[in-house]
Figure (tube, rainbow, N blue to C red):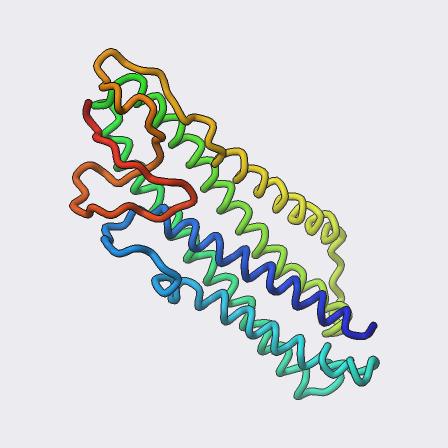
Length: 251
């Protein structure tokens, strides 16, 4: 079936778009910004521009080559000067979009860590049970954000490396990278490990926490997740992967 190559490229492009978009929204939902409005996809249109630009560029490039190959299997966009320049333009544009995306994601994660550091300043005023609970939650959350950044970095590097190594066949360059297959295998395995980490670290395994003598009965069985600082004037909750329950910082 001649359309299988095109279908495979489209499926991979959709996967990249969903994965990169998830990381942006995941980091954005945990920035704990001072915004009383509920978060919607419209709030992230600036963040997703780099993802959309890269995906559209690669889709146009793929249609120019794979689409024509549906009628002429021996066609290659690289045989003409115009086709080569056009293909290089789209690939370079996609590479630039990938770099901009990673820098912006790094900035968002840095903001998340700054907000977590501010939140940690209120931990000493909490009761022992609640403080230990929050410390464990903050630890695993920091680990997950670092894993997200590492996964994004290797994904972007793998994409750029994949385009460069194809120069041996497309651009007649003498490129010899023996670690490409191992790197791609590592990236694919890392995606699976990251998904398992999300499932494990966000599992509701601490519905209840030990009661303290100074804690009222109604607060013992409440589920605790990250919430805004007690000084936050907004009364609405942040939409996230889990339910955010507001708690008083000082018992």
